[in-house]
Image (cartoon, rainbow, N blue to C red; front, side, top):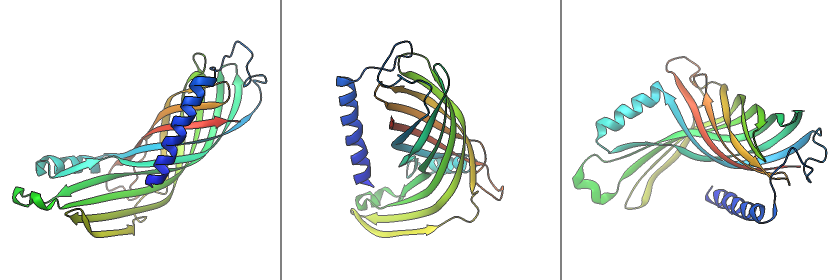
Length: 240
């Protein structure tokens, strides 16, 4: 996983440096290498980083636990990544419809340690991570508001590919427990969200974007608690 994040970071850095040095923004009122045929349907690829979390009743219970623990329990966002493809369909000048399909990692993280100061020297800790993997199908409306700058929003339907919980525990920097098990039972197979954000596309087709997925239906299939997926995303892509 660290190698994947490193490769993405390196790719982002190199692409951004190259774009800044060589590329010009998309100009919809002038000719460019990208929009010689503005009515052409184009395909693209996209990848980037996720910061995922849960919101709702379960999270409030977690937050109550955090508050009562006096700092010995903490809740964090789960880092992950997404990768996939999309199709840009021109509808009008400066307006596109963009359906896509991508793999995306979601979930949340809960960390804790022994709640006794006399044991702090042990550096004993426990980490529980929900590792949810989804196949996302967003359908975005993209509006260009300047030379390359655009905003996008639309619905997203996601299918749960895998849902696991990992437990790690250790002391003195050594792991005493490292287990993972499936938790598909009780979790809804299909998730619905609204997604939106902003981005910038260069004349070459290289693009950057930042977005947010706001879950609309509870991930609990039994209706015992209302908890929703929320994901912050940063992406790099290329439209061919």
